[in-house]
Image 1 (cartoon, helix red, strand yellow):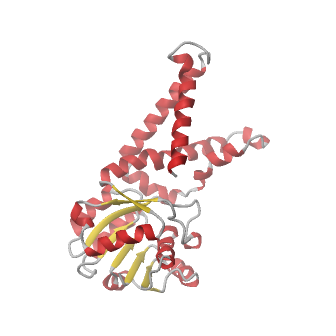
Image 2 (cartoon, rainbow, N blue to C red):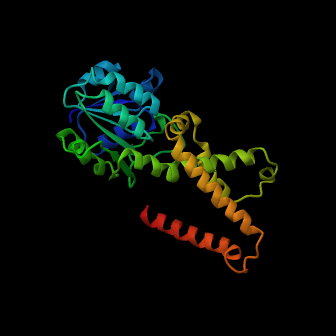
Image 3 (cartoon, rainbow, N blue to C red):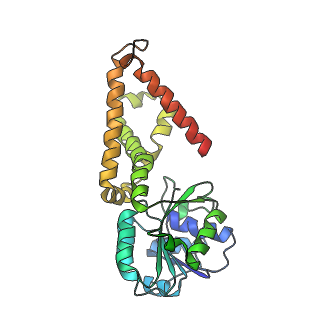
Length: 288
């Protein structure tokens, strides 16, 4: 791998460039992005040069698509005519089924390997990029078949994942989208809903709150510009996650009307919920 072209040199694309450089990549990193982003990326030495998409695609051994999801889909429509035969195209989209399905339809001269680094920050843009963003984080790969992981360019890309501090997880695209609906997209909606509720209420104006409220609303700082595509491309799985969460809240609301020391099922439901929640939270922290 001698030349990497990053389409979308924002937080993820810029961090990938910085991460592989820190991990020892000595080749050429080309940026494809808006003029404003390119200027910032060049000033910050995130990329070596900027080129139009067609030229960058024709030179790259690895094409890294870190654009919004629907922009990735649009890029795939054009790339096959521009890439070198044998090049690897991968992406960093937060949902995978639409992207993987479209790649299977339109990419034939190159290899495509879907990807999703499970890393991020509330801040956007290349100015927020950092070389250590992927440290200790899962990096999901969604091959269409085992052969997608077997070509030389894919094997080399897989070798870079632990070098930038991440660890690979292999899933099919549909399983990935179902999982992140519960583990990523639902937490975002919960945080945003809580913050939106409190934005219109007088209670927070008293300043009577602790770190729990700050922690719980951290994700609400995220921009809808990013999340709109996610909701559009994973609507059914996210809807199921939201329905499941509402059902759990309804259980808790019903239990609030029963004495905490009463008989099962209602009297002990909150206690059991706290116990189950504590077990999951502890296990989550052991893993991360």
